[in-house]
Image (cartoon, rainbow, N blue to C red):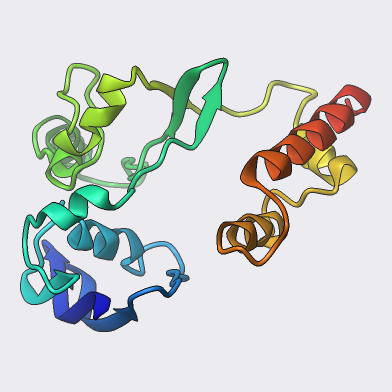
Length: 217
């Protein structure tokens, strides 16, 4: 039996075609991953697999079941990326960056459109994302975040004099935050190809980072 079958699936948001007639088969017991640039449809496809989004055409089957099958309850999606001191955290950031062209002859119209897009269009919540409004409701897709008291963190520019500090610590620790090496190590351990545990790998990463941080400015 195939664990997953995606058959000629298309998903479109307005005039943007996020997924175009995608077909994919994942055999049971195999490991697959999506690789592609931003906007190539990776997240949209995963959300359709989880039935968070419905395809405009085509079909998605998980263990040969359609729609809101109970088998999806056994799939882990949107894992917590960070846990420190017993509390979960998730990085949050803006998606679209809108502005008004300084040379525009229609600044008032542009401002009105931006206000509508941000305040009234519900583009974020309609796609299962976090509302851009502080008063906006949390999306149902992140209900577990509320249950577990997840704290959202918004990344801000480094303070003066600290620019590039993370990269310097990373270089000293020889981890490679932006490289696949340590991620591959975790994947190999998970599939039993290495004689290491997740806990041992993270303990080593944390020690190397802490040691490098203490020596780097």
